[in-house]
Image 1: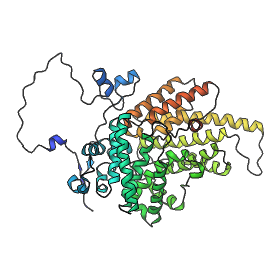
Image 2 (image 1 turned 60 degrees about the horizontal axis):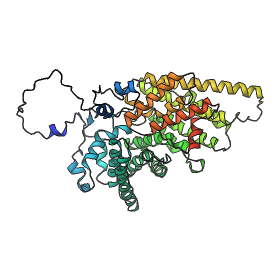
Image 3 (image 1 turned 180 degrees about the horizontal axis):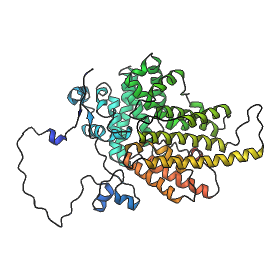
Image 4 (image 1 turned 45 degrees about the vertical axis):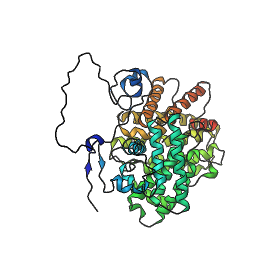
Length: 477
């Protein structure tokens, strides 16, 4: 196995310099009253023509204004040097398809929204080796790049959807001709599926379900082979899929759901418990459990028969699960998701009435009322603990990028007597939008405002029920 080196990539301007002589720089005189403008300031500060302090993810001026900060994402400081980094060699057959500007933007900036740590990013430069044989993957990356650079605005989505249409056309051709590797096919489905919700801003319905099912078929093929979990790509693909699945499980109807807890997948999850995953961190195992929780909660709200034994099993597994503590901040991320699962389970089953009695059990109205009050108190306590975990993570930490879902679950349980915490939730969703530019973060604020108004009017509706009523598949990834 060849050695790998961590190197800093110079800018294109510096890389193009071949002379070693020092250029002549004219003497510049500082003018005391001359205002120095930031080159990397946020859009709002530039529009107002004021100096931006460039604090990430939200500059101080935008914090004071309580406005959305549209800042420029920073490039990762380090990337891994690989032997196939030469674009002339790895993209030789795709010269007519490559938009170099969009591809470079993906590699250096847009790909950061797909991982939990931008310094460990297999979807950046390492993805280049798959592009030569997969035009569909190339156009998938370029579609997100164009939309991300334009903050997923209407104008940016026009070019994005054109690139996406090319990606889909090439992908159909690759599948029909059985052309391309399983790795490239999975990455294409993953990129297209994850981004489907980001581009469906009018209806807020698309969660990339066909791509989710296609990715599942490839995952089943990968894990069916003995010893496959030792393959680094299988680990990458499985962690990506489980993260995607747990976020979308609730939005798939029971008739279309595919169980995740197969023996083959379960066998692969345990070895990944203490393996850092660039998308899932150390949360692969809890995401796997949350996928089942999401499926069950959707079944309950769709009036399917309840399963008391499954409810008890899910509750106990969520209570007992502990995250590895290799990284304190990643531990807090996992813990926030664990409590998010408990709130989902408690809130959904509470709305469906008392748990059906098992044979031999006795239940009385008084006991049911006591249980209901206990459940409400536990839900509120879990919601506050989720916010405590999230707020303990430093504001500039990239791990916040995956925390939208537990943040929504916690925010939905805040009462009128907690205005400061509600404002904190609003602020953090705006910060999340500044980090990844995904519109669903702003839609979450809109949903919370509507939910809080319903609660003030006496409704006990959960955000899950409201999402179904509005027909919003709020895929927070």
